[in-house]
Image 1 (tube, helix red, strand yellow):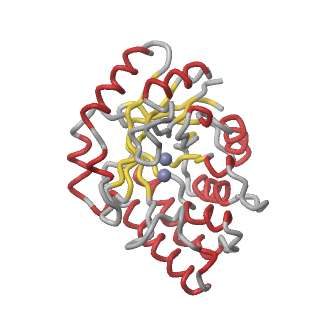
Image 2: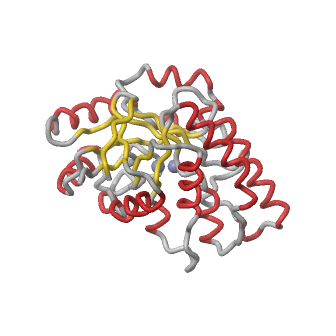
Length: 275
Ligand SMILES: [Zn+2]
Ligand SMILES: [Zn+2]
């Protein structure tokens, strides 16, 4: 079976501590040991005005040098893809073109991570909100996604139900029915643009107070029903141990939903492998 991981991070991502063995070299060595044929490093590039200093922390020239060195090292054995996880790119319409000119990118991921004006969804106190406040946060998130899916330069869209996983972890109930209409519209738009969606397996690594997270599967089903065929596998690993985690499980679920191929991106073009 062709094994790939299309979304991982290294110490260049601000949420990976510098003292972890997660340099590009560390991550590639671990991925190769696991028998991956394709390994994408997609470090965080969050340039949201709501957070300080992320952009400044990212040493592009050094990052690119290290990644290209790894690509060279594994040439013919494992494809090391150069990518970024671009956070809130619609806030900086000129920024993405500028970024794309920096390096020979294979894939650009598009994400929404931050509650406008405040903190990340990861730490947002969903459990302390009223129903109305929560609904407003979700509406704002879906407004952000509306902008995200129209952003040029993005190849693959990440974790569409991102805030919901943190609701689950805080034991907060929600209904996917409130999300269905708009999310289906976004997915149809992604399909019409010829872009991809990822199977982000990160929620399966964290116990969510015993509540199973079916949101990922639900959205993938909607994507398939919209005619979506470009599906990538994403461990979203920030450490070596999580590389390709839940890979086989994710492919099994994808098959059950009706997908027959998993995609990997090379030079912004999807390449399909039968699952
Ligand atoms: Zn993300
Ligand atoms: Zn990520």
